[in-house]
Image 1: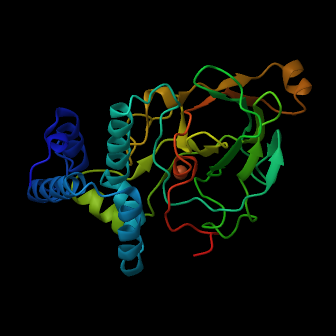
Image 2 (image 1 turned 180 degrees about the vertical axis):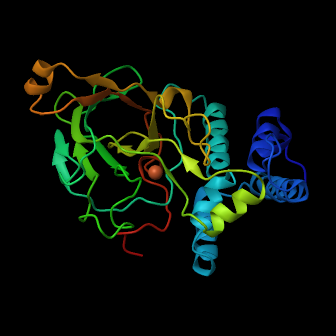
Length: 308
Ligand code: FE
């Protein structure tokens, strides 16, 4: 089975990274076999034009037998490969100029509290550095979009997500924020940490066999949506993280790397209502106009907190 996309230099390089062939460590025979398996599966996805919905149905099926498939899929580059295929389809339709998409990951929980304009995400128990993030949701002409929903979720300073980490309060570090009349949103939270796949689990064992690690850089996930605009699934990656360009899930994209501005001066700390240095991120989301109602919707995928 041949796929021009899979034969492209970009995907060949990605396959070398996925199978650990671009690095020392691990077992050469396993690397070669893994590369062939993933390459053939990528070609199958491309040849049959397998939709993300079909892919997630399959991952969910596999996960019922082996719970870590939700981590193995991004670790073997499948989530990123689906993004690249959607990018290609968009370019073919002449769609460009929006904030790039990147993978959702398996840790979203639907139904987070909805607040207008501003929300505090953390419950105050995590002693991590305070974070203020603000920006606007805009169209490709730079016009603000009032009433857009910024659905945000991130890990705590231990790299753990509420719900999956049952020691956290419900919806900790998860909120939906509706943009105000100027298309603006603002949130307060804590600066999240990067994290890794569970130690000694199936995903870590598989990655270790080919010399790879299972780390992700610090990041914040978003769904951004508004009537008449294409639904956006993305993340921002915090600049300076040691795994920024070595994400086990290949989700980092240059346009999604954000700089953290640290405020240490006592006066600006006090003025912001904090008693210790805090960090700030500014980021605008740019949405593309939708041509169909379907494009405004989040893709179907089994998710926590949603009714089947
Ligand atoms: Fe994540």
